[in-house]
Amino acid sequence: MTITNDGSLAGRTALITGGGGGMGGRHATMLAERGAKVIVLDRDGVAAEEVVSTITNAGGEGLAVAVDATDIPAFQAAIRDAAATMGPVDILVNNAGIGGQGLAIEDIDEATFDAMVAVNMKASFFATQAVVPGMKERRYGKIINISSNFAMGGAPFASHYAACKSALSGFVKSWARELAPWNIAVNAVAPGIIETGMTLGSIGKERIEGLASEIPMGRIGTLDDISWAVAWLASGEADYMTGQVISPNGGATIVGI
Image (cartoon, rainbow, N blue to C red; front, side, top):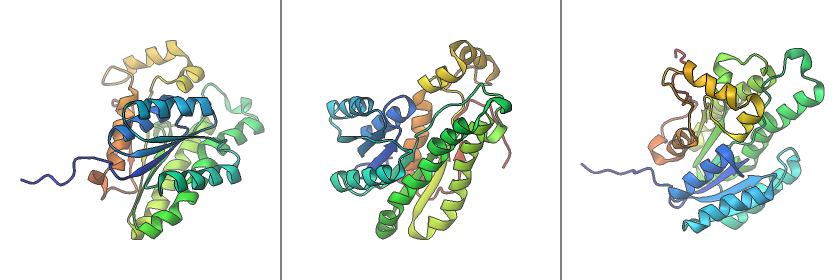
């Protein structure tokens, strides 16, 4: 038996939006561990530099870019400039996002709604727009949106968040159909409850710990649980996978196909 694909990302360049910490930071370091050169974009430049330091200290190659994902012209220019430095983007992980749990419908004002759309939905579209021409030219690419299991089961007191995460799943289905002729695979990872800074800020540690008893596997997910799915979708092992939403959630949300 000959094994032809070991999940290595050697020779690939990956770009992670919102990669300066938490889930995005782990996506960045794991893809680097598997051999990818990694561009870490985050509005917090210091946080992005810290992730890149972790990558380079382990012998990898990374580039930190400080940019606000809601400033679309600057955001797209930063993506193009980073690609000129590190090499064309083969893997895009649309991870940038903000939380919004704990808000009733009547408490979501227009500014809060617009901020959610700008970061969680609009930035993902325009990051993808920036890298697709190069992927088409090379006839290869992996685009991975970070959605949420809330997009599948709904989220009371976070309807604007769930709606934007649902939009990311909708992008996946549409982009997968549109880009398949160029050998560009588009998928989403929809995490269950993961203890990150954003989640802690949204619902608090006590609520997170309480949710563990409601999950069939009996525990909250880890960053690695999510990044393993991202790394697999980014690899050649998933070359025939497109238009799909994978949800590592310990059985918290189980839906039919």
